[in-house]
Length: 196
View 1 (tube, one colour):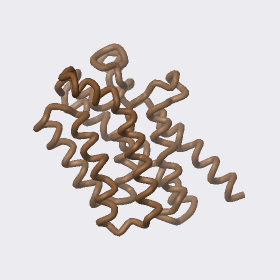
View 2: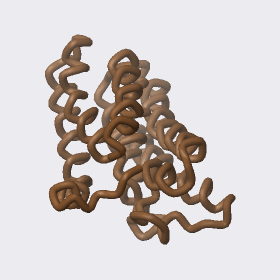
View 3: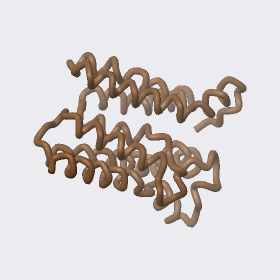
View 4: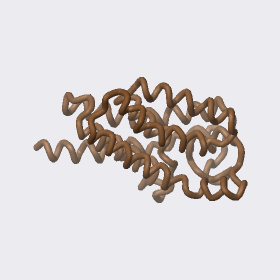
């Protein structure tokens, strides 16, 4: 029964992740976010093309998807930092990045993952959340900010006394984020990455 509950929670969390925050917000302005800018349906592309206020709304909505997934795990297990919390977090990120409802074309998982980590490690997440905005403003490159805070995440949770397996799980998340940003890294290297 516990396995069935865990599977059900994982599936539900995946569909939490598929909620099309950027598409809905941009759609209210009669725009298809996948046809403008980078075409990426994420907060950074919305900020770049529709402004900070609109982009922040998408950012928070994307964070909420994984936060709900982790919250679901808490309700089912009564464990704040148990394995199911991470499974549901990763499922939500996969739903956000590879949504079956949009031909598996989604965002890069930074804001979504940040929402789940906020539930697990609020202090570290608050620092990194703030740092993302500061770095983005300073460098005008959302990708630099996203990669920087992602790489810093395992160090932050270590400082908050995360268990070893949690750090390993977080390293897997960092690897995923870096892989999703490989096109950005190539554009940064060739000085073709657009400003935000």
